Every structure is written in structure tokens, then in C-alpha cells.
Image (cartoon, rainbow, N blue to C red; front, side, top):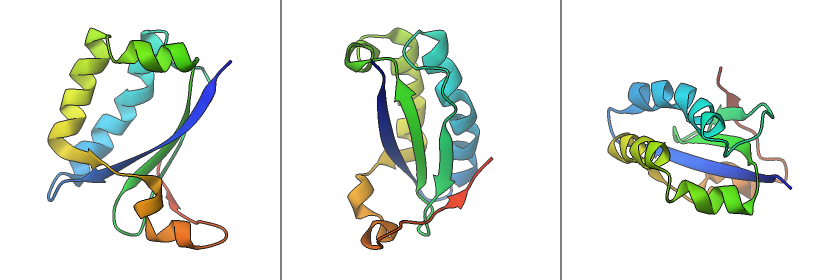
Length: 105
């Protein structure tokens, strides 16, 4: 069974555009490796510039397998150069009953 996750990527200073480019490759790489479903992701921006992505892994096993996958490790290294992963709870929007974000294409 799939696992829907919410991932938050806070761009490093001056790296916003590079993160936006990487976001276009994230899900296609996971899908190519058989780790993510075909469910369309939702990508949005928080008021502090953090990019929030909701997507679906194939399974818990797929999430675990990603940590041993060469293509995913390479992708994660590229992400590490332009952003930090942050908990959803650190975003101001999560204090509201209905957290609202700006959609990204």
C-alpha cells in the first residue's frame, strides 16, 4: 500500500531557483526507480520560501529502499547543496486551522 508524505525543503540563501529546477525532477526520478506511485504530487511554497511537496511512495519498503538506491542518493546530494529538509511543524502556516500555501507549477 502507498504512503503519502509531506516533505519540506527550505532553500539555502540564493538557491531558490535551483531548488525550483530540482523539484521538477524529484518525482520522475522516484518513479523511474519504481519507488513512487503515479499519483500527481502537490507542490507549494510557504511564506518563508520553504517548498512543500505532497507525494506518494509505493510502500514503506520503497521508502527504505530509496536509502540504498544510487540514483536517489545522487538526487538527495543535489538537494543537500541547495536546501535543508525541515519539519512541517516549523512552518508558520501549520499554526492555522487550515494551513494555506501558494501553489507552484
